[in-house]
Length: 335
Image (cartoon, rainbow, N blue to C red; front, side, top):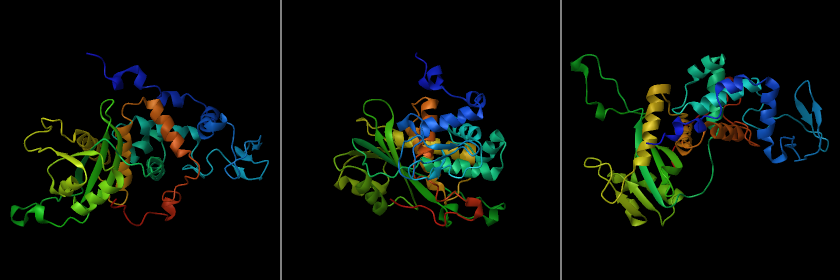
């Protein structure tokens, strides 16, 4: 039996030790290569786009454009805009984040990096924010849909006489995570995942999500939940009854969505323990990203995350100045 890819040496091409052995100047050069990869690591002015040999202010590691005289750095206009951490610490945070297959808590990250908890919390959320994608590309082929509920647990009363039926207790923070996963027909697993946070599995929201994000000629696989009944009118709907089987005789199943659910549960129980509703969508999207990249080596994931963090015009709107009061005020719900 052949060795699993994730257990092979080809799956681990970068490590904490390799980053730790790099000097601060080498880490800075790595930032330049990733940020300005289109210009072979040479600075490009974010103001006017000039690629001329800009003035370099060595004491501040900044550049001044020779054309528009705009002053910028390798992190200007990115998630790490106005950063205070050194470049090595940021790279260490990203490699720790990339290697944590079930996510990582801010407390553990703060201990690994020897930084304050507040610093680690914001840094981890900035990385999660960089993983968000805003595109209108619809899923096609075979698409699986399933939901997993969170924050629905009600602790029972101590004395038996005080206990009630917890199924009937109102749970204001109870949410369901709907995952849409496009199967990879050329190989194993899924090739693309989209996630949504709802207050319940219901026909209205499910129909809206499917109409917006799934092509009409697609085949959809779900379980027996009644929220998916109306999909039959517009899609080739295949269903599996989990009370009887996990996969039907004709291959109908939503095992890829169940795989997403399992990884999310392991993040929830094993790492974070408690997830509030305010940033639930960010955590959910992180697991979707980890599921979609699970067959890549860790350096490819590391470079992809760093490139996303250093994308132009990606200054964090919610975590830049978070501890000074710049916070999200409402959760992200719906399609």
